[in-house]
Image 1 (cartoon, one colour):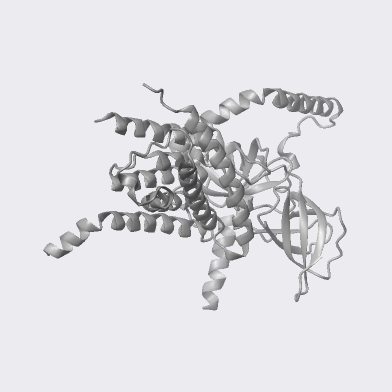
Image 2 (cartoon, chains in turn orange, brown; image 1 turned 90 degrees about the horizontal axis):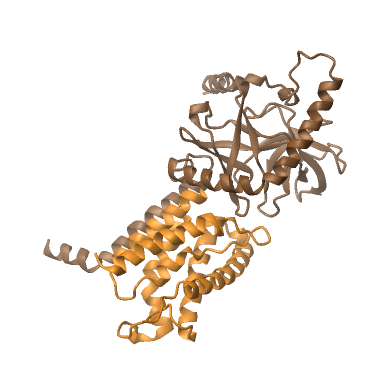
Length: 168
Length: 276
């Protein structure tokens, strides 16, 4: 048992609790709601076990689905984000990301911002496509994805700054 | 054999991803097909319990409005008490037409969603109180939805703000009926489809539940006519109905046990069998 594992378990539970108690009840203009619980997947350590990330993301999503009565849409979106995370890393930080020690919860550089942006957008578009499940709602899907992504990114950055560990 | 193992070990992440994605897509598709009991729902003791805790906090925060409503209701009951002619009559549940008081279960909404295309409510009573699938849910203003899943202590409701719900409804004054659906846009309005052009409809006419439904008794309020469209290429109207209920703010609800339901379904099945 190392501390990274404990931190991740703590994050998993805390983000889920905050999402269910607070952010699920936020409905700007009736349909825009932020989903900052995916910070768990975004902040997962870069070089740790990848299958662990995929399994825990599935559990995260299926718990959200249980509370939202939404079938399996959160689970699907989370698993897709967890699987494609290394490719988004490559896209945002360049090829040699594995050799750098990327700490996302430090100051916000353009690379880090683009990583969060792409991740949130990927998750939300999968989520809303599966939620609507019909092509006649394509504009509705895009609009929801756009506005919800903006809110999720804003709240995610605020949360990252709030839980930033103290410099030793 | 060795190669198969190597393949599995090399691609373990991809296989895991495909497996989990397959499970979640299967759950999604299952939940989109009409009115099948879902595997993952908030009618279980974990999420039901959490929602009940959250609801107690919300109730505490809303004490002021709740008090105002109680004062109003008290005033109404007092006025009834002083003006009533026959004191043996129970004033309360008589307002729901065609239903005996014994057929009603009172429950409370502990979770309410209205921002997605398919909305569900969670209630804090379940099969222990006698709630079963496909019972109708209403409150004092009008209809709310149909019971979807039940567990011993909780149950979920398909809200009328759900694109999968189809409820038989009619005009109060003329018996022309149609099917009540939702187009996923505004929480205050639903659509009444397939109303024949012969019907004379004016803005402000009342829409009530129709007698064809086995879920709701006839004549429960739904809303008023707001705008009437002609559906192109057909001889039907589509009516935009303004709901009596504010679906974003629901408290106590009534669940209707329809006694004739099983008899009616059995009868219909029998006649279908004869046809075959």
